[in-house]
Image (cartoon, rainbow, N blue to C red):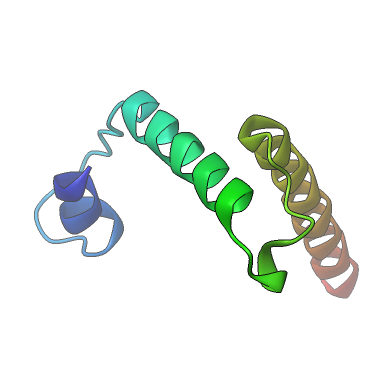
Length: 79
């Protein structure tokens, strides 16, 4: 993941082809950590966060799609 980030995402130095790494292990790690933090945190900032990581992820993807889609439609109306 670091090589992909460093050589393609953050800096277009030397890699001209996008080779997206498998992210299954990273996803599982983040999901595990998310549940631990949300379930154990006392901070008011975390109250109301979705404990089910996958469900929360899907909700955020849907929201991002709505916002991005609206921005694209708005941009096209100016052209």
